[in-house]
Amino acid sequence: GIQVEQSPPDLILQEGANSTLRCNFSDSVNNLQWFHQNPWGQLINLFYIPSGTKQNGRLSATTVATERYSLLYISSSQTTDSGVYFCAVGNSGNTPLVFGKGTRLSVIA
Amino acid sequence: EAGVAQSPRYKIIEKRQSVAFWCNPISGHATLYWYQQILGQGPKLLIQFQNNGVVDDSQLPKDRFSAERLKGVDSTLKIQPAKLEDSAVYLCASSLTGLLNEQYFGPGTRLTVT
Image (tube, rainbow over all chains, first blue to last red):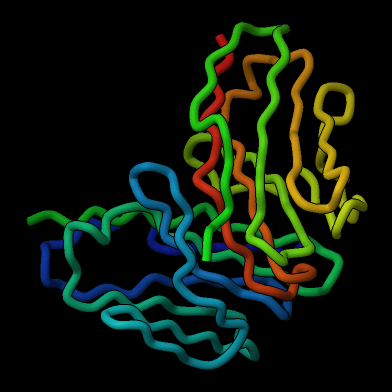
């Protein structure tokens, strides 16, 4: 099945700093989602982005499907950005979403 | 628009006991998923429903886990009997239809088996 690798596994930032999280996948995809899992465990949708670029406030994401990777950019980080960021991919209508192991982000004041 | 609802939020049981979790998806979403998330890992799909039919249950431990979505809306996941390794967060998600649509997750049920 499709493999998903996220990097870095852990990241500590000073408030106000920018960061880039990466998701590599082993096969072509038709579905790619980025999630933020907050400290209470809730998975919050950030982007549905099987290809192209999207922006939402301080967050943006780019997926280069032909090169099998996606990037999540966080600018001017805030303490509320802390948590685990997951990338999940699917490559057909019949295979389940496969999640990476996540990037744990800690933003300190 | 209301999100995916789950209950209970927390449950502590002893091994060999049974437990049930409930999920109500976003209104109009035909596809419902149950995931298991073990501490430190990403969620793993247990079962997927399309309306009231099972699409994929290949990763559901059927000797102890069961799930139903009788009327094509809300769903129940049951574990009987529970083992220590079932301690995890059980997440329910829904999408309009199929795996190529964006999935939305509920708050999860944190299960501890002692």
